[in-house]
Image 1 (cartoon, one colour):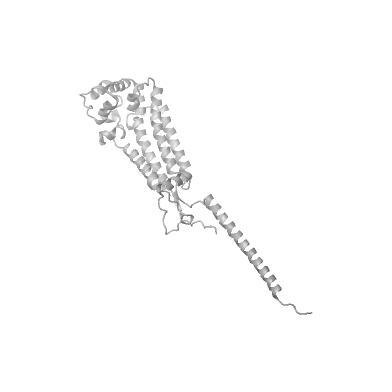
Image 2: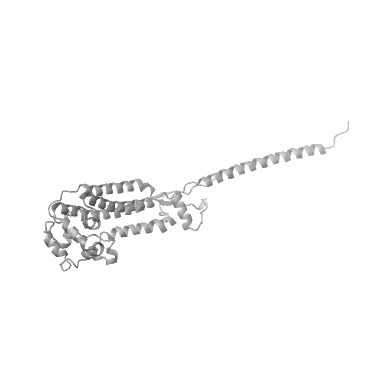
Length: 308
């Protein structure tokens, strides 16, 4: 007899529980990505030095010093000198530890021109100090695009993992491994959560964000008037990680209940069982008919015939 698919949970039953794949793989990766994006919103000065090397909001030099973007290079050089009043700032000490004193000199040299300051406000300090082989604005922008694109590619992988079909091959295989080879019988299969319907929307939103971010790097040349909006790189960094955190959260929340699909093997087994049952019943009926015919024949032979 064919097994009936379980009905979806009613109003009082609540959502299905998390699957082993969600509990041990998807949820920890989501938590790690959200923590990473949250730490990117925290100023470097508020983080330990060991963590600030790879995490933390990269403080803008002009906002850190509370100076206008038109401040002469001489004042910036005096502030960034080993005995200057900005030398003890955590971001400056981090620059010296990661890139060396010569990289700070190269940064100051780039800030000595108007075009160099525009490039700094768009790209930030890291490309101007870390890219030793860059010589032109296009090369600095290519380095910045590589760094930004790596963040989006990592989040694309996280979104692809979160929106994996609940009964797909990879998710089923991971559940099998996590449950140490235990496979639930067909009558124990229950509805599960799924986010597969969010894959196209989430990846399209991520692609749009990356396109806007890369366009900002390539074509943001006009510097606004004095104020917070001049700091293109700092504002884009904060907005990028806030939107990425929001996108991950929305994908995790927007779930649907999916019924377990009828496995091909289960369907074949059911068809085989039905076919076997029909054949056995037909064979039994034929056997009963043969027995009845044989009994009738024996009974007719046993009846004595009257003499003529």
